[in-house]
Length: 119
Length: 110
Image 1 (cartoon, rainbow over the protein chains, first blue to last red):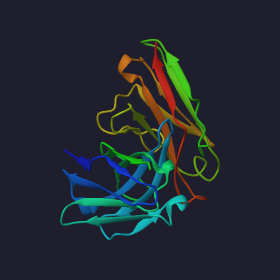
Image 2: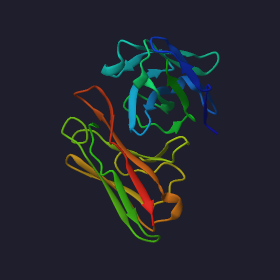
Image 3: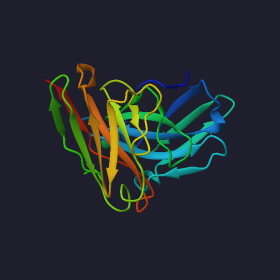
Image 4: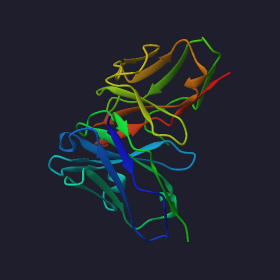
């Protein structure tokens, strides 16, 4: 069965960077892409961007364009999301989600990774 | 402020039918298909409806999606206690060149 397993919770100081991983199993990793979606406390879902696991092509939300980098390691069937220059309002649960293309629905999601930004 | 507009809350009793609306614009719902997600806090969101009205494998038919113009809706019939969750609509936005979500609707089963 399709599974996306994310790395554990992180606590970071303002200005630092965080890198969250998402290990995929149960399907051919390079046949799909991975989107990253976050949810701040008490807020709704927010799309951050998408990466093709086939060729590494990325599409980032304008809001995160400057601060985010999404990558994949096909040998490990793992996607990564790095967010830099962290601020307190980046405190959120970060989810990875599978999508066949950047315009495709998110059919499987990871369990989420809580990133807390605090001095 | 979310790009897509949903009511913050909805409620119903077991067995009832409830509807959740999602309002957008020409650059998103008006020209792209809508997906719906069910989210229980502390768990991974789940795809409920895709391409406006299609069911992923395993989703019961009592969840039904529809779209008209720049609005979409999710209808849940035969309401059950396990349906208590947050529901989000989502669509691609051509102007923003990215996915946009509604603010979410918290469904309470009374």
